[in-house]
Image (cartoon, rainbow, N blue to C red; front, side):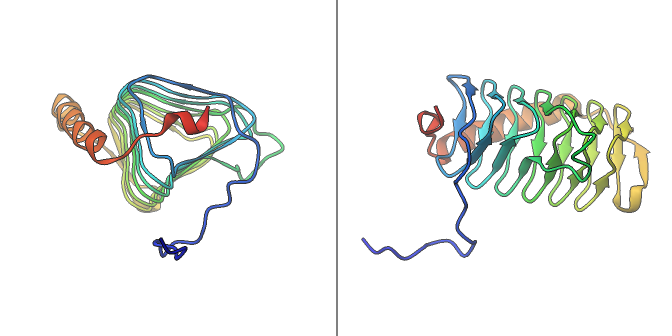
Length: 193
């Protein structure tokens, strides 16, 4: 077997403290995910964590709800822009999807149930995002923002209320997607304990 790297992405720095973890027995987490920090990281049942996703609990604990989906290169617990006044971690409700390349800053950040954070979006520290929201690709939610339930955030801070009543359909499709991903992603939760 050759020692040649198979990824075009740079190698991941795995140095740093190993956080205390609380995992559900039905969690699917890739052995290539990165968990660092000093506060606890809790991941609940039927959640799927892709390879190369990153969780940092240096500024507070991280709670990932039931049936969440965290894609590759998503970064939860990122260093907030104003570290001096930041306290707290991150809480994700049930059925939350955080797509590839998203950044969620630590600092009391909350993302409500059935919210979709699309590719490349950034959630500032202390933001409170309601249930059934959609954060479109490359959008930025400023630190401390309060987003009401059912809001769609566009680039440049524009927003509208989502009039579709498709939340049950979104949950059903997510359950099916999670079922397929559990078969495709090799899980290694013991690596992080």
